Amino acid sequence: MAQRPGFPLKLDKATPAPRSLKANVSLKPATAPAIPAVTVQSLGMDSIAVRHRMVQKLAAQGLQDPMVLQAMGTVERHRFVESALVAQAYEDTSLPIGLGQTISKPNVVARMIELLREGATGKLGRVLEIGTGCGYQAAVLSHIAAEVYSIERLKGLHEKARANLRHFRLANVHLLFGDGMLGYAKGAPYAAIISAAGGESVPQAWIDQLAVGGRLVAPTVTATGQQALMVIDKTANGLKQSVLEAVHFVPLKSGVS
Ligand code: SAH
Image (cartoon, rainbow, N blue to C red):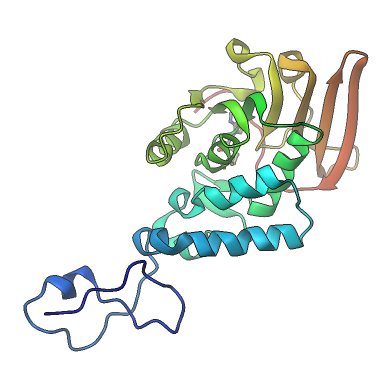
């Protein structure tokens, strides 16, 4: 009888190549071991170690909020990318998610969420995300916030995110289809607002829907014409704005499609 691959499947080179499922059920002994394809299934079983390495890299890059690092180590990023890209899921790179959009690289996701949480003790309250995309960042946010409202303007991606997130059964993530430039008034006020798309300016609706004491992080075109991370704190005495490092996000667009 053909020997079954060990559990969990190891991806390191020292491990003999696991036979394909077909080889396992075949009555004839397999002659040559199949080359292990990195699939969602095989990576899924051994992805904890891969994510752990990603988190170590994030920490080495200067990210230090334990709650954010924990969330990044928990969410299975490979479940949000096309199967052909699964092997790259934990590399510090942005990846295409369809309809011309991209999932941000882990470093940028972690950095923005760390900024959202700066100074907070414990989990944030309600968070609004503009640009659900494939749903990855919404899943990460679900671990650092009580409720996540995530809005997407492209129907195809809204549905893709819904399908991707089904597996995780995150009861505190609410996916919305609509124009996020208008925010989502029903969930307001928000402890934090995060945009995954870069606009020419920060829409007034976001400021209006931000709670006093809340923080907004959004890639925005600055005076130089380049995109940079914009942080806006809404205080009892008004708005406090800071422009941080340069970034490259897909454009914030109005309307739905
Ligand atoms: N957070 C996402 C990143 C998606 S990329 C993830 O983890 O995958 C940014 C997304 O913003 C794109 O899907 C794009 O369609 C969306 N977007 C752009 N303008 C928008 C708007 N006005 N309202 C809602 N979504 C918008």
